[in-house]
Image 1 (tube, rainbow over the protein chains, first blue to last red):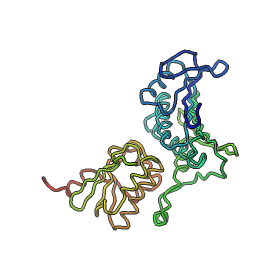
Image 2: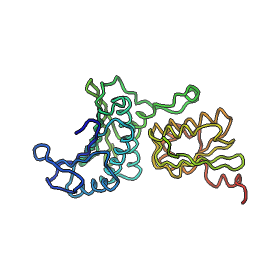
Image 3: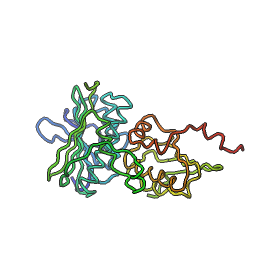
Image 4: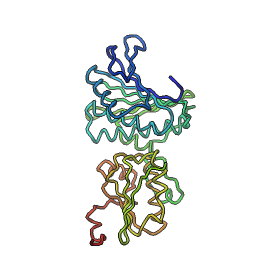
Length: 198
Length: 114
C-alpha cells in the first residue's frame, strides 16, 4: 500500500468478489479481506459495508487512514454504519461517533503529529456483548492521558485556552475505555456494551 | 478553507449566523473561527445549528471564539435549533452557560414586519 493511502478492510468471511470497484484478497489463513482506498470511500460504499456485515456475519471492521484530519470523517462515517449495523440507538450512535472522532483526532494531532505517512488504525470489533473500538497511532507514545472533566471556564476564555475537551468527552460517552502507550505508538480502546452496563 | 460555513442574517439589533456546514469539526473550524468577529455580530447574536449534524471538541473550540468575541463587544450570544444530542454535549462542557439556547419564536418580536 502506498505511504499515506488509507485502506478499509473487512474480515473474516468467504472469499469472493463483491464489487468490481473493491478488491478482495485472502490475507492469511481462512481470513478474507476486502480492501479499497479510503480516499475513494463514498456513501454508497458504507451501505456495502452494512450489507457485508449482514451477509457474512462479519465481526470486525478495520479502517486505516493517513494522518490528515479530513480522513477523520471517513472513520466517523464508518462508526455510524457500524453503530447502525449492531443496532445501537440513535443517541448511542451519536455518542459513538463523537468518541471515535475525538480518539482519531487525538491520534492524528498528538500521536502521529499530522505526518501523512503515519497511519491511524481503527478497528471496530463486535461480540455478543459489546462493540469495541481500538484506535492506534504510530507516534512515539505519550505520558499520562488526562480524562478528567473539562468545562468552559471564565479564565480559559480570557487566556484563549479553548482546547482539551476531547478525552473528557470520550470517558463520559463510552461505557469504558483504556489507553496503553509505548515508543511504537498509543492505543486507545473504547467499549460500548450492547445492553445496559452494570 | 474557502467554503462558506456561515450565512449571516441581520434585523435590528439581531444577527443570526446560520451555520451551513453540517460538520463543526477540525476541518471547518478555521473558517468558523474566521467568522467570529465583532463586526459579524450584533448586540443580540444567535448561532443557528439547524443544519449541523455533528460537533466535536475542535468544533466547540471554534465556537468558543464567538463566545469570546461577543463578551468583548458586550453582546449577548445565543444558540438556536440545537439538537438534543448537542444540547447534552454543550451541557457537559458547560458551553450552555455562555451560549444559552433560544427558540426561533423568541426572535419574532425583533423581526421587522415586511
